Structure formats: C-alpha cells, structure tokens
Length: 231
Image (cartoon, rainbow, N blue to C red; front, side, top):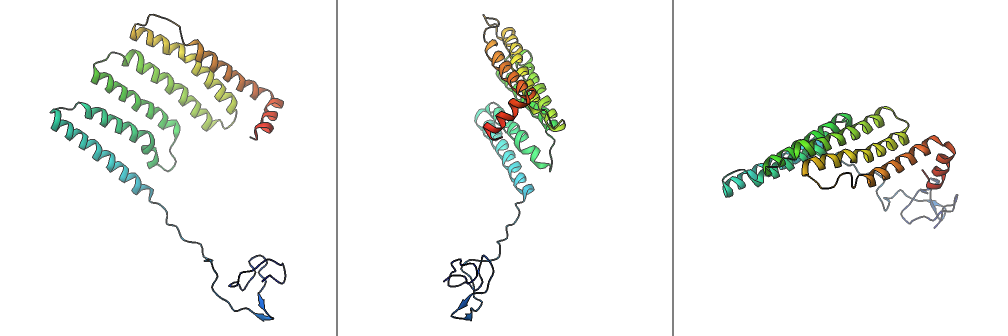
C-alpha cells in the first residue's frame, strides 16, 4: 500500500503517511486511528547522579586504602607495602576524580596540583626505599614538566589563538629540557657518560616545533594542509 500523495510505501498499521502526513485511505475509506508498530513517544532517560557516583568512588578508594593498611599490619606488623597502595590510591584519586567534583574545573589550577601530588608520591617512594634521588633528580624533572605543561594549558585556555605557536614552542622547550634531565641524572646516579642521549629528543622536538611555527607563519602552507588533511 502506498500514499496517495507522495507515493511512499506504508505499513498496514499506519493511518497517516509518515512522510507527508496525508491521511491513509483504504478503498476510499479513511483508515481508523490505530496503534503504530513503534512507540511515538521518546523514552525518558533519567540523568545520572554524578555526585553519587563520585561518592561511591571515594568510598571505594577509602575502603581499599584502609583494608590494605589493616592487612599489612596484620601480616607484617608495620606499614610496609601498604604505603605504596595508599599513596597510589591518593594519586589516582586526585588526578581523575577530584576535578570531577567541580562543575567547571580550571585546568590551570589542577595541573600544578597534579604535579605536586606526583612529586609527593615520588618523595614517599624515595623515603620508603631509602633512596637519595628525589631532591636531585625527581623533583627537578617534575618541576620542569610542571612548568612546561602549565604554561601550555594556560596559553591554550586564555589566549584562544595561535595554537601552532604554542605547541611548537612546547615541543622545542620539551626537547631542550632533556639537557637538564640528563644533567640531573648525571649528578644523581654518577653516570660515566655526559651529554650522550639528550641530542636525539632535543633535535626531534626542535624540528617538529619549528615545523609547526613555520606552518603558523606561512598562511598558504597552512591553508593547503587544511585542505589536504581535512582539518
């Protein structure tokens, strides 16, 4: 059976054409209104309680930390391996879950907080294993990474343009920062070689960063790449 106006094929249960909304006639008689094969009303979906889910995650993290400490005390009589579990749980809670409590978390604030928690996590590991690498290696490396990432996030959030310049500069800065990373590893771990591997990431970061800056400066090249890459 087909619609008398637009010719679309109709199901037996339809009394109005779904395309042009013309009444359906059967042998010259207007079809009675019947229930369609599919529901016309859209199903209602209840909104997920975000706060409730975050609360459940918080309780789960807290229970896991408490259970690990109690098991450690029961087995070893002291806090040994459970310290790694607790600090890891704190790290995993602060990074993805803590910002979710806010409606519009500001990454410029939370990125330094995340790096601070990472530094504290490494500090605990250094203390637990009796190492001497935190102040001369881990802390400077985390600090350099924090400065670069926070700068990029701040510029992306507040400048709103010049992204190619921002990411190009970030790649160059990241590549050059490997010089400091190797320097800190040299003075911390008494390595026999000096300035051995930093040149590889530094050159790669510099070349890719300069490529982005050249693309940002040269408008015809930028337009051509947009057309070819569909961006």
